[in-house]
Image (cartoon, rainbow, N blue to C red; front, side):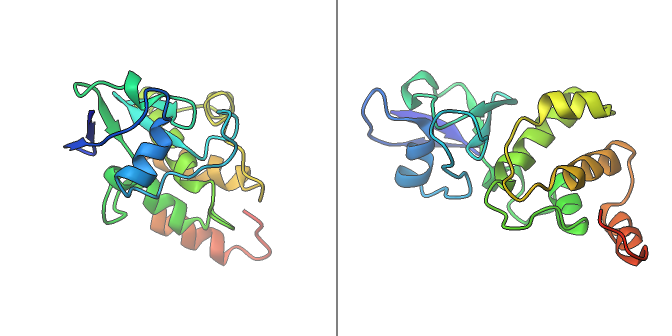
Length: 166
């Protein structure tokens, strides 16, 4: 089989029902996409397929054609320069970090669809589960990007606010 992943056509062998997640991680070595629950509930496995967020743990790789474009966290920005990645780092969004690649992929899809999302839009789109509970920081990072702010200076403003628990 062949997939267009992060702008490159890649070949692999897998059973018909092998989830895309396992092809990405085990066959193609793209380990940024994480396995969390295996039932499409937690979102740690979120990738983009033709620009739409998709839970790769339940999506059979055989349903993704070579014409479809799969983007993983590694393909979002190899050097971490994507604005969402910068905002995540500047605002110290992750704690343990396990869910964050899926969160970042969901957030980038949201911002592409709704460049100025409301809190309700964020709540509806960000269905990923974070066991550390960084949802307020996720929301803040998305709002900083939506306002066109500099994630680095937003992080400094939060850091310098006395007693801030952003």
